[in-house]
Length: 339
Ligand SMILES: [Zn+2]
Image (cartoon, rainbow, N blue to C red; front, side, top):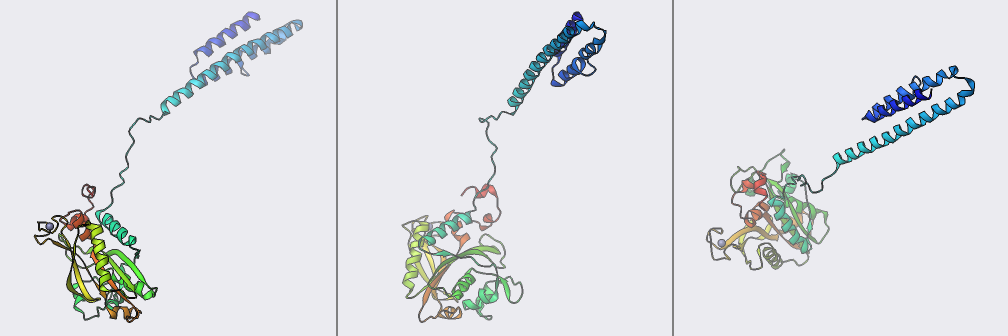
């Protein structure tokens, strides 16, 4: 009996040694220690053992089982540790590997120019106000002193939704909307997209952007307008920049002017950039027409104001020396990344 147990133990240990995965250890357990296992078979054979020898044999069987189980558990722990270590080795993060770069794109020159313009006016205490791109004819034209038969209405080739609703041709209707609210004084700029049925070329597009400004308060004069725009031009194009006001006509301002700045390329001497004149036109402006104030519910005897408007694309083209407006709309990242 003793020899039999000894040989079972040796065989079991051999089987454990040759097991390379935990599943095989389980097979060994079933084969030797299971209900139908070899060691259990010995216990079942106890009835053939003399009764006085039974405790001794029972103890031997238990010792054998304990010895096999101990080696088996030890092997299982080693196996599991090895598996865990292997897994960790495979999942290790190499922090020295270069990361995958996400393409986050680039801010558009229009956006960069707008942020700069906004910053200048916000610095002077202006509020940035936005309004609808689909607008009533009433706000886009009439409240701005452009009645139905006014030639300016033809000049600004308009996209009509129906006879009362248009795609706004200018950001000025935002001014009318703010004036109508009647909260005075007003100091605002209105940036946004506008639409005109123009053919696309190097300087035109059916959709472009404007930034307009409006100031309404008591005792606002043309001198305030000149001072404000001079500060703006110096901030935008450099401290040496000079401004020049040329008389002009707009329906919503009186008097009106166009503003040139001294060429920031040649300093006013004349170059290819300013077409030899030394000056570059940047915006239109004027004192708000008393009739516009009246139509928006403001008493022109008590209040006065000034307004100005510029094309955002024009500012971007000038500042970044881009010679074709179409480049701004093609969204070619190789172009946009240069700014
Ligand atoms: Zn020049």
